[in-house]
Length: 167
Image 1 (cartoon, rainbow, N blue to C red):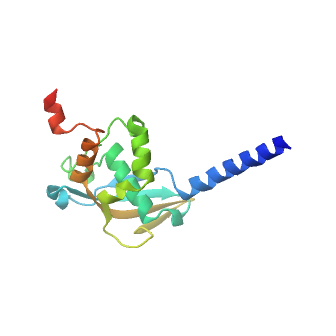
Image 2: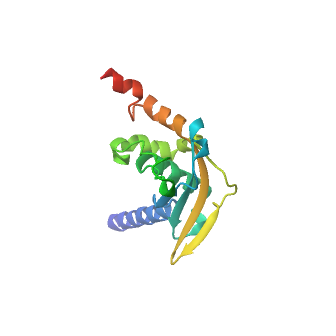
Image 3: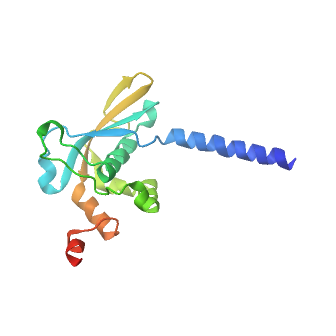
């Protein structure tokens, strides 16, 4: 009887994990600079995030915004056709696992939302493109890059300019 109960509990845990994973898609995205970043002088970055998933319903505005912040932190933003001007390197080139607990909390409890806003409105993100069995959903976002960088410096995740001179 104990074995049966353990098997049922294990099956429920595995099934629950699969359902939770389906609700929150992996970090599968691309970032693209739409045009020369006019907001960059004010400390903001404006760009388009393209999120990918099997169901377009789960690629909500929040998931797209999460992916946009994740991209700025760990991948950076390539300038694309506008040359090297506007190129933004990753804020945390060491990667997610360098401060895994911090980033699990940062993304898990929604702290990232204070640094980003969507320039397109609605629960479902802007552009939706069907690509075979996947969907590609695009959202134009504006990120307060300076505030995000300051937060990471204050939390000692990255070095600030004053830290560099203290060495």
